[in-house]
Image (cartoon, rainbow, N blue to C red):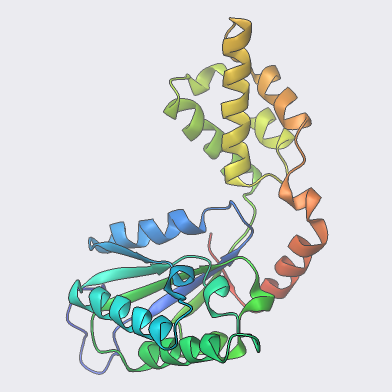
Length: 241
């Protein structure tokens, strides 16, 4: 059942999904793909911009934003990096707790056809109330891409920039880029093309491999955090792929 359809008798309409994962692995792109798959508008809500120094204004901003989303229903409401907007604190006079409480109530009681897609990078900063069953239909984990997926990502970004993927050893590039996210692969292609342009020579597999060799991906720089996130997700989430 999709957003905009009538729910079959006896079935609750879908409510939303939470996308956890390593930074740069396509969570935001997946949120956009959900709206495209449903064929409905995508509405982005930045919880960080809701906060206001005046008493009550933050909560009012959130209420108005959610009402605006409901006015556009059926639609997909995308909350990017949700942990940054609902991390509770004891130093803000309870504003963050009230924001979290109102959002949870809205998630549970809304009747409009607003499908919620939230993304998060730091699961440790998410309150338990948000993760319990019933808040979201499912929690998906977007992991680092496999070798096959990395080869496809190289192909996409080379083709996007006017390069013929057939002229590159995609399998070798995928192997060299082990541990790289999709965003890091894209930047490797971009950097290699800049280098090729500066040298007045065509881009090659070796040139891209050189850029990759000189890059330390997030999975290396933040190896401990990435490992903890992947370990936490292994038994608690559904693989996105």
